Length: 103
Image (cartoon, rainbow, N blue to C red; front, top):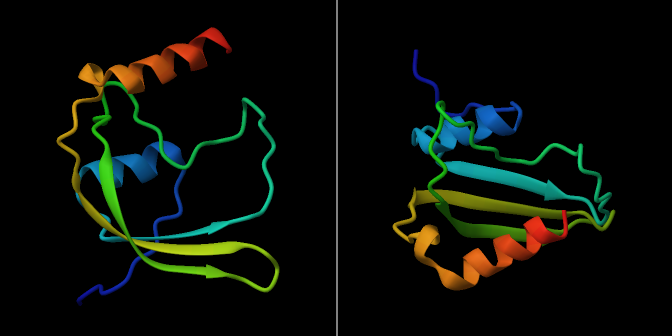
């Protein structure tokens, strides 16, 4: 039996774990035109110390469509892990410090 398409509908940690292991080649994301800002809202991806790496992954957009109900449908090919060193990126670190200061 050959599997051509499989949907991963897990939580943030399982989504990120599959991404980090190179088991996802395409991602489809539907974004609603709303935000709640709630600290308990689940993220789409989340690294878990001791279980997954937190190395960024590059996405290549293949499809973006505005749906009739104002949602945005985005599809991406999942690329390689980024070689960018965020620990040495001063601009990135400054943003992280601002986030921490305002949390």
